[in-house]
Length: 594
Ligand code: C2E
Ligand code: CA
Ligand code: CA
Image (cartoon, rainbow, N blue to C red):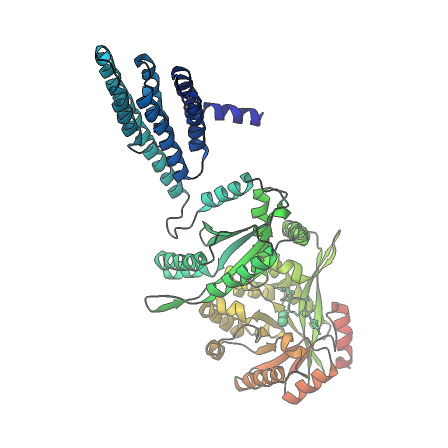
């Protein structure tokens, strides 16, 4: 059906009519020349051959030469073997029109009609001069009119093209915009590329652009985008095209490369490295990174929408993996995305249905070897999916801000448990992880005060753990919150210490009680000299700031020995115990009570 309508549309197309007219006119002129000339009329077979070639040839020079030769045949024939005047009329009228079609915006058709007139004029008998002049005027008028029309039509076409080009170009960066991007995708498909074709799509999202735009204003934001587009442009080639498809989103299309995977990864790495270079305006430097998702055309079942969606999913994975990186789309990723979507949808319902519970990992005083606290860690027992670890659902809860409700439950449940232990004469400080999203979007002070009030837990038995990166997102306001929590008696620990480049400047001002050295430094601290030095430095730094230091993820006795040597205060890890139930914690604490 669509094929049929396509043909009809083609038939009604102006260009098709013009082409038909062209060939029709060539045939009529040819028949006249062939039939009416008495001598050497077989020579005129060259006439249509030349004009058909002129129309079909891709080379403008060839078209010019063939057209000139065809005119020459008529002129020379007209000189040596003149046509009767009533036959001249046909050649007269149609030939210049043929040239209008071939050379629409030149003076060639008018020139050819003047030449024709002069040639025939030589042979016009005096009696037919009047008729000839009439024909000549008619001819000149029609040719001029057709030439002018063709000229304006050409101009109009050009203007339409410019307009279309502009509507597909992004004003700010001069890259093709979203419309241009979809046009390029469609063009790629029209060229007969099937699903086995080689092409890759890189979807780029700038990390940290929103921050610059919000804090520094749109002018600086625009300059940053322009500079990034300029850097991106350097990648453009016959195979690579770049587009700006939205605010800070860009797309790069790589076509038909034999080593496509390698090429795509090399391009992604180049984009990552040039996006990191500082953006300097008015003597100020701004910094950005890029998260990239790459998807192959062959994984999209030939559907552009799916291709874009795949690249998008992969790009989001890069964001989750800590940004400033690239990620390939694969089918496992789509399974994960479905699972992710399911978890996001079911999270709050699961809370209602009591599918969450807490486990507690002991924190041990290295000198006395006594359990002095626990870290509460959340677990989700899903009826179909089984036990889901927090790394799988905490980031989802953070993205959807459901962590606020979940975090409130964890806080209350942890305080309630600590109070139960206290009631059983077990004094243990419970540490609760508080996410950056909670600090940014919830009233954490009010939430904690309420949990303490509700459970009657003395504030000294509660500690919160927040990561360094969470603090750095908005240090001033978080310092105020932390200070008021400490005034209440709640302790504050900095989690995963050392992972993000810590700002020593803020550390000095931070109201904290504990630094938790990240597991990644503990892992190799016995064998790797640098890690050992980091452990030593953090312990000294903590003690100089009057802060206790905890090591997390301690799995080996040798690690514990080293920590003891370095003067670390506490440790936590599988060496002593994995996270366990509240009952088991009570058992650990029994010997202490006796
Ligand atoms: P985290 O706060 O750094 O917690 C420590 C993680 O290390 C826990 O993983 C713990 O089980 C694990 N761990 C402890 N000792 C060892 C060891 O010796 N070896 C190894 N390999 N791992 C050890 P878990 O429970 O899977 O939690 C992962 C992360 O999820 C936590 O990292 C924390 O960031 C987050 N999380 C867990 N529960 C909560 C919660 O209630 N609220 C929030 N906001 N985040 C939570
Ligand atoms: Ca923690
Ligand atoms: Ca940690």
